[in-house]
Length: 300
Image 1: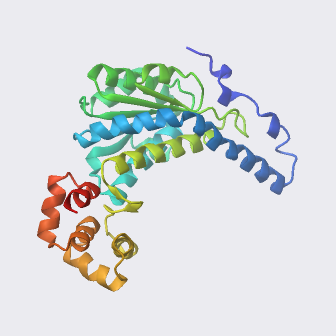
Image 2: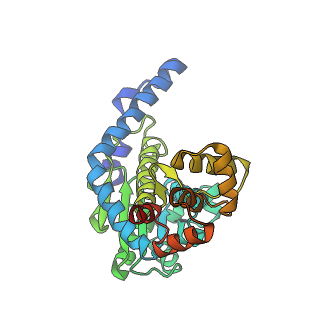
Image 3: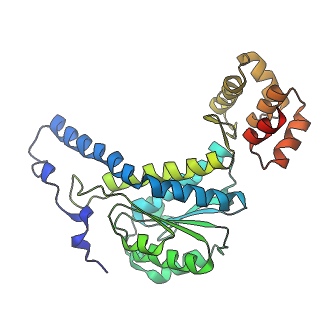
């Protein structure tokens, strides 16, 4: 196992050595300049991110689950990504969720020792009864967290798709995972504070992976969130605007059809695009696993 002190994320950043002596404006300029390097680091990893999306989309379309696992900041980022797929894309909570070292308490309180336990990682991943259709995304800034490594190794034995996301090149997790995504962010502005650039990198990669899976499985039409859940006034308004933007009808017409469709954006779009009833639209969506683009393409 690599020594922690040899990891690039643990090194001292020469650009922030006098961070405590500069003005506040200079301080935030230093932080911003370092943050700007994250996107460049991700650029190098784009082919692997694309591969992860394609492989994961295939499993997800077959009924698999997206499961995130990590400790500390990484674990919380996984939980966040999974939770947001429900209101944004109507993915059931049981099909996209996170596991964090230390359990629910670790979401709000740092439980640092849990990440060192391989036994705990193995127990937590076994508890969700992985199948070969599932996707496990292991998250760790260092790329060597024992809790996550144990979970990835077990998932691979089961036959689940394993993806790792770290902020250090040539990580141990990447050597285990089917798709290892290492984003080289370099030393943090504040030495070892991996909630900064490392956390930003993991968040950006997760945005790409989960959003990409949603696009590839038909939950996005053009660049519109057609499966958004209209659970409050803002989202009802957004849903109606999406119907209007997708079809070119007025807001008023979109609103009328939106409610006829049972407040389902994708159903309303099909009703307008194909001039059919809500019942017919729902039937077509069921036949094409909710992929609205395929329905429209094959119906015109």
